Length: 97
Image (cartoon, rainbow, N blue to C red):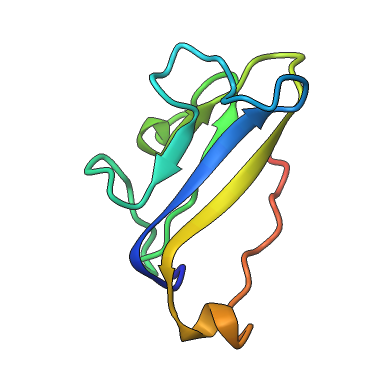
């Protein structure tokens, strides 16, 4: 789990404009305070980024635009000790079919 006292958020930004990625979703982000999130059996959360929602994962999906480059930023609000002592580090983004 992400070591956050308050909450955490992943946000997709447009590489060209450096603004939020423009999509049909209200915001190109996913945060831990969303009531719609689907948790994994280990109580973690998998977040999906792509132009269309993967089957069965729409709750944890952040829409991107086809052909539009973007970057993802993780913000931790109220980071806890595992963040500072580096005993927790975020995993790499994984490309899924």
